[in-house]
Length: 424
Image (cartoon, rainbow, N blue to C red; front, side):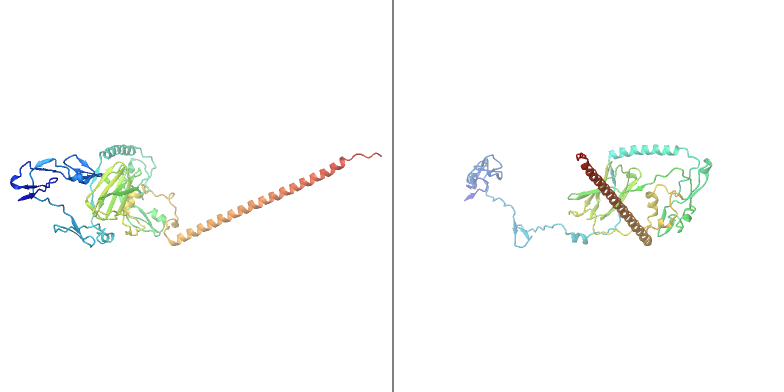
């Protein structure tokens, strides 16, 4: 019984007992259709006519095969949207990205415990920090080696001791290690919280902590604003903080799945501190921090591969902060020297009650009166100028009138002079 050969390019019938290794001439490759040319991948012959393509003889000899090749699997599309089924019976489910509403419902709480992220410091930054450390150490030794002048006041807040010699260093310095707080008319130190309304009484409060005298101003940290930016890829969000020469020993970056907290010290005594309440959810374990001399890059891995509309969550509303700030933060970051003198700060309580409603209204009233007074003075000045210009114009008109009369008189007198004399 004759069998049909299913080898590509053959299609002949053969007898099974006559089949051998050179009986079939076929194409072992696949058909190629490109730029209107048709051919086989196993040989170089190409043609534009489909009939000629079908008649191209095979390039390889082998045995005939009556095994029908398996056709590629094609999906059967039904009328229902998204219901695709394959001929082999296995169902394939395609899941699109989650909607914003679904992500908001599944959003974790921002109160989750934060994980401290490891800081990767580049070799160039380590070299720069080493040079800065050497220069800072030399400057500190230079300041400490300076001779203290007699009469120098102790820089510790609340201590009014003057330097009189080496014996003064042996005395105990009683000072306020906290920060001054001015809130709702009250004045006090955050370390002892003895409140008073009178400013002189506040200045005369004795210290609450014994320590050594300090004759050199302290170089404390300052909390400053720092420029930052962000960009995203398909799987990551990168937050770039442009803090130059950031110190990894005094910098921390913590995060949970929805909040990123950055505390970065850079340029010796500057501190950038900010909490980012993120738009989306991140995977903290796969996130990283890279520090280079010019910036700090925080790479956050997205938990869901969706595009973020913004860096921070627009629905987050920060809690109103109290007027009296954190004492420790105020002490470390806000001012470099708490030395308060009567000459530096006014004794008037109204200057410190800036948050009172009555004081604000009084300030607004004074401002309105000042503007009104300036306006009246301006109008008077303009009226005086107009009056002066009018008087000058009137005087000019009178002067022109006099000149005209004088010329007229001279003309009349000249007419009689030109007449001939009459003979007597």
